[in-house]
Image 1: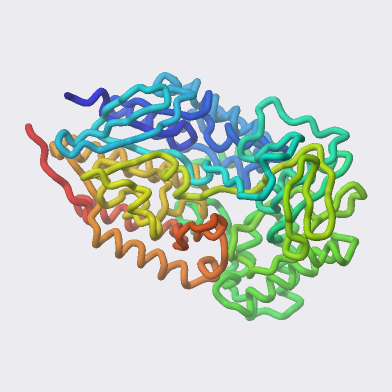
Image 2 (image 1 turned 90 degrees about the vertical axis):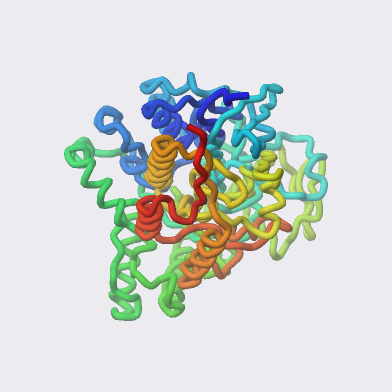
Length: 532
């Protein structure tokens, strides 16, 4: 039986929209599937109060269409969720992308047929779709983590996860609200919730490093300056470690005086956002420089938070750079509000969630609304929630039982004709994801065109290059503190998940390798000739 389409795409977020658009432009037939009722991916689901991007909006956008770049008007330095979702909808409208997707249709199973070299996908509506190629664009942070907390199902108030915030919103005015978690989502949501709730109790598992966003409206002249040479900005981002325009000070924090070091840290703090991490080049590779950054944060928190006991609880215990820095608007100041209380779960662990609130080892907190800001089963979770079976019926869950292995983050040995966009082993979450998504999309499109032109029926990552790639990732990450702590980069936030560092940490080197692999006829992949 011939396939129904050339390609199946799973996901209608930024990756899914980009890939179906380019597939259509290059005369590939495509069928997409999306769990949600519309496009947007991350920005469709994460509608919690204060949700905002931490990459400048002028850079967190597609570059495949110059007309789109010129026509769309961003309003803020860091766009909020509603504006980003409007942008996603505008792109879907402008390029007529919805026609390629079946919405509200989660994928349950995808299985490769060795005999016909075709992927067969089974969706939630019972439909079966067959295609030569499978492209997963499911996102890195789309599998919400709901921890196994005793009594959670007994809570009688409103229970909501930040990653599945209702589109109609949540009524918080006058409510006693509890938030579990103080990661990126919580740090954005807590200041907004505190302004609405009668009482807010934050249950902190691990304190995070957070810098002020210094968000502001975009001035017309700066927008026009960028638009006059958008190509130049994109080219510059291509050379940066995270694919966004951040200058790194190539001085060591130890090469300057204490006063100069303080001045540079303060300048970056006042500038706002992730560029703080570029205050000195060696903040994550030299432990003394890292100590200096940690001390700066401790003093900042003490200077902002009035209560010394609360300030002490908010000081991170892990090294700076082990986890992605958070970006906030008034986060630390929120703890000066009389209606906000911080509970440190390392000192006062949760015994159980009751019908009316949370009981810890010390007391019980009465709540009307409980917000889980407990993060994601990152990178692998979205893929492993689908029953994906490759050659000879190999199940991805079993293959990755001891940790995710990919080649370039794009292919998986034993899974022919399957491409992963922003998969484990790629820069993904340590980069400007719209920019790096497009790099993946263009690489996959060029690969598919090559296969078509050379009448190649099957492409599959080989075991030895895949293993070598995993070793390269470990070696690269071991040069900094990023792989040495407990973070979702290594799967440490999910009980029982195998520990493996899953992200490439230097985008330009990654692009160079992808380019070399393609130029060498897709070295590291096994290509099999098809019938004429």
